[in-house]
Length: 166
Picture 1: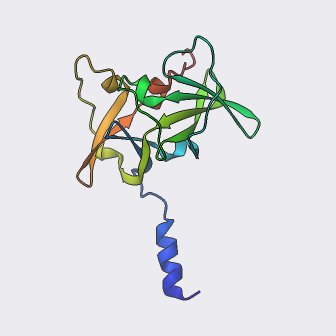
Picture 2: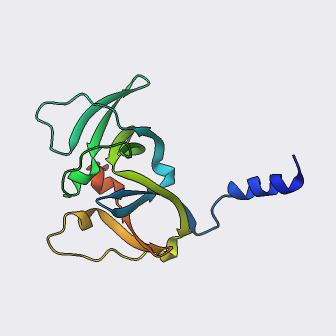
Picture 3: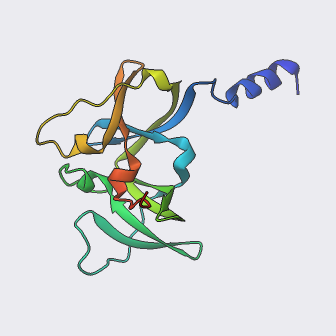
């Protein structure tokens, strides 16, 4: 491999600079949201789920992922957005989360993936409090990136994760 090609490939896989982090961005109702890439376990195409009786409206059901039963939620419904008919762009992002001291995987349906971005933590601004907006209660901040306004999703709140008592 010529030296020039090797250098280009190495640049593609550089780690974030100090004070920067990488985020997976996705859209919900044409709005862009971001979650730390470190929480992402895998990304899957939408597939039918096994419904659970008496589940919350945003709880889609369960899927079997290589022998593990994983709950799937519709993030659009969870944060109070209008229903969306799943299409070829609909994906499920599997997140590694910790609930009550145990590691678990939680699947989240999003409209479509948009990007993987990197920006300084200092560029994240506090989310504005908008009255009567369920979607802002799940925002931990906002950032402007390449002319786009991206909402930093508070994954713990959005997933309804129960944290350990202090």
